[in-house]
Length: 200
Image (tube, rainbow, N blue to C red; front, side, top):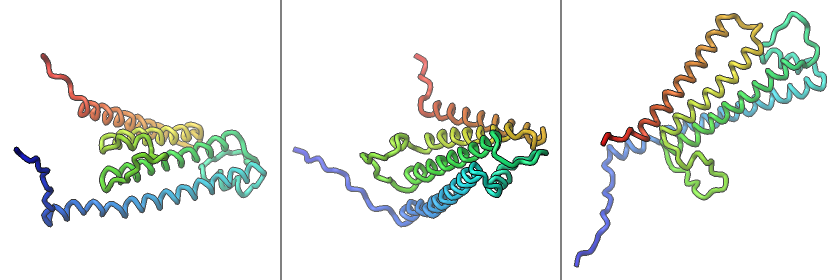
């Protein structure tokens, strides 16, 4: 009669333990990103308050919006128009998308590279966190960057009169580069996750 014994894990040697514990050096980086998230929240509300004040006729708020979005025209602007509203709203959407990107980096990066968050069963657990790993996180970040780049490009096209052709072409090329890079990352991830079947 043989008794099954479970192998006992030997403690890590000092050098491997030190190397493994070095992952906690990333903690201040994620805390810094949380602080950056706070700055974005403050910036969002400042722009939103300016938009609301300008809608009620405040010339100071209107000028702050115009300076913030870099809108220029030969005709003096005394009230909100559709172009300014659209540019401000796109700027707010841009802040939200960057904030979403920060959340993905903070939560996904900490879960992947530092320590488990132990959110299993929590009602607010993000759906994508169930299968997050370095590869999935990389694809999601690339997709988020494309979305942010699209918003920036749309803002530039709406305000195209204030940009040179060189800037317009450069931003378009950069956006296409981001798009191709994301496609390459997703394709590489698919090849690594699902290798081609061996011929019979």
